[in-house]
Image (cartoon, rainbow, N blue to C red; front, top):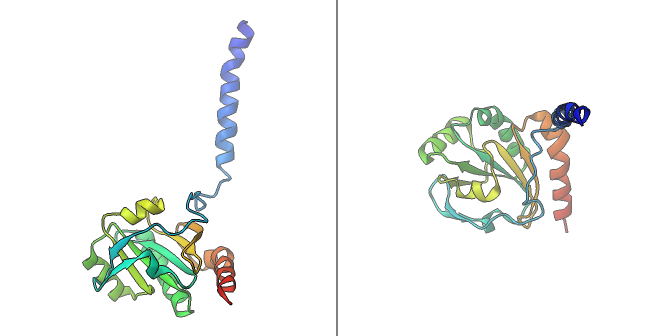
Length: 178
């Protein structure tokens, strides 16, 4: 019995060590999303430019990236030039300005250019909450019907685009062809 009690702490330690060791090999940009395969959540929010109300229906019709961004997000500043290049290449990108001020977002887009076809002002974070957003930047790939097909957490740089997201986006574009 004493022997068993001496081995118990060792067994607990080994169990915790295996659990932590496994975590070393997980990719933090691949956070699971319960929304994969489901349509974008319903919303009615103002555009960042303030010109009209936008709904999830406005984001349908073409495959697209839905990029969660904010002016307070340092990583978004790193990502923004890549989004501008992708937009110039014809990639359809919608923005969700997350928990931010419209005036700051409008200034950002004026200063750093606007890669977004539409830009949703999510000042309260309600859409972000419905999407399961942890922070910014996060990007969802949606198909032409507005169904979420992939979620990426972190900065989209040229390598991430080329190796991970471009093939998925192209697949959605190919599927959308009649």
